Image 1 (tube, rainbow, N blue to C red):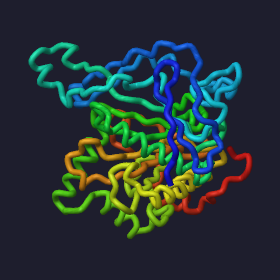
Image 2: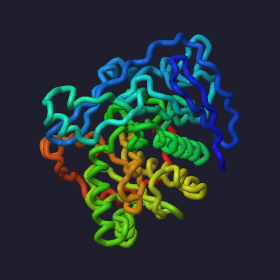
Image 3: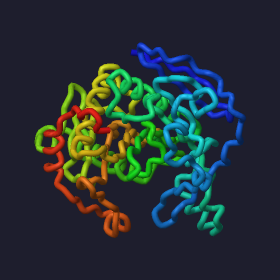
Length: 378
């Protein structure tokens, strides 16, 4: 399958890409006739000497759109007298540059660690850099209501193709060190628009979490000759106690040391470094198992469950490609029908998690959850 991609430019110069389903009837891209407004100036990166981490400061995001009504949603198709971010009357999947980006729109390299520069001249300028990078919005459907779990396999496949396309193209941009594909779902997570969509961040540095996991993967490969996540996958499939679903090319399980009340990892059986390396059969398979996992998560309670779905792809310039293994992590802070897990003292200050439920209990509940939702539940 080859998803058709059409490119255009919005009035202010931002890129917009239209990804069409195999049997699409959506109209071709149209011109954005809104008055061209100046794009926000780029933010700033500030280096934390105590942790060795870059922190993005993007004050212009304070004015971003917040939970608009459906009639004012900027992700819905444009209509006469009501232009939106997407200048067509209908579409399948659309990706465009975020109007309020945390990173970008400039591209370029940033130093990995400016401590030496700071040691030579202790100043604010030694610890700052332009917030280079790219932030994109991925809109899953022209329908305002619904979620990724509601997508049929054909549409889910189009979204996966869009993720793969953007992962490949963004990784080739100047200064990009990591491409992060993710979806925030639910106001409890901090979503500012309820229209079904996700995002992509292309960072000019390797993120702190990935620095840790990549180092452990590289150490494991040196010591055993095997990729770490491959051993984890074999461990979970062998045990079976925490498995939720298994398809021809993917396994979904609750990890042994799950941090969150709901946490599911979806891991490909074949070692790949990124979404763009999945072949057609794997993408078709993922388009089935991924929404089914989300439907089971939603069926745990009487109302939709908030979650973060995070694709962990290998850094662009990883030290040992043979140690990396892409996977998806879905996490939710929902620990009961009307209770959320908040990151308090131990988790927020020390990074030491305390689990509220066991991985085995969560996996058993997800296995028992019917994948089909009753009408009117969303």
